[in-house]
Length: 210
Image 1 (cartoon, rainbow, N blue to C red):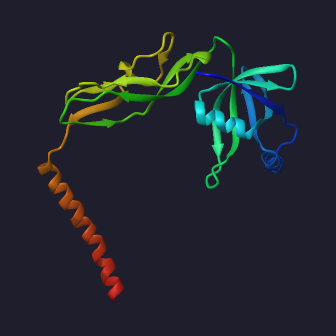
Image 2: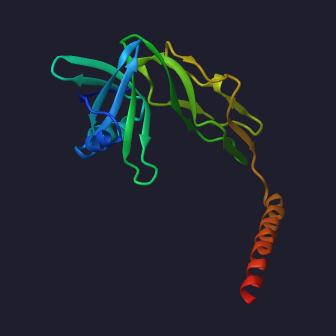
């Protein structure tokens, strides 16, 4: 996982009005907390932070340059976005130290092709791991290449980076390989779906006629 540098400014104004003014200035209100220290209220450059999230995900470790002499390592904990306009409203940052372990969610990438005639279903797309803050992986790979029907892949089977431990239940189902349904098996399901759709449309048509 890459380490990214961002300039951050201390915030001295608080409340909704102050937050709106911060956003109008092209910055994002943020709070940095952790290690028992007092929370630091900051303003992050909006375009640069959005680019970091887009390119590296929320597990990127940020080197925050606060003022001219102070820098801190931080991990993005929570990103709050506007429900309609989709811009970032607020960010919570967790203070970390070099060598310190943190618990993060990491995406699972399924690779390979299961055996012919099978259907692969995915139950988990991420797992939680405890790992050193400066060595968070971008993703974890799970190979299902050649897996036969009836095979299940559990969280505990995913290979983790050296020094990382699994925080998710190791027996949690990630991916299952089942027999693909035949055309004959799918026909009754399709007929039932069509019947249900017709039943919904019929009262609507009667209502229109009335």
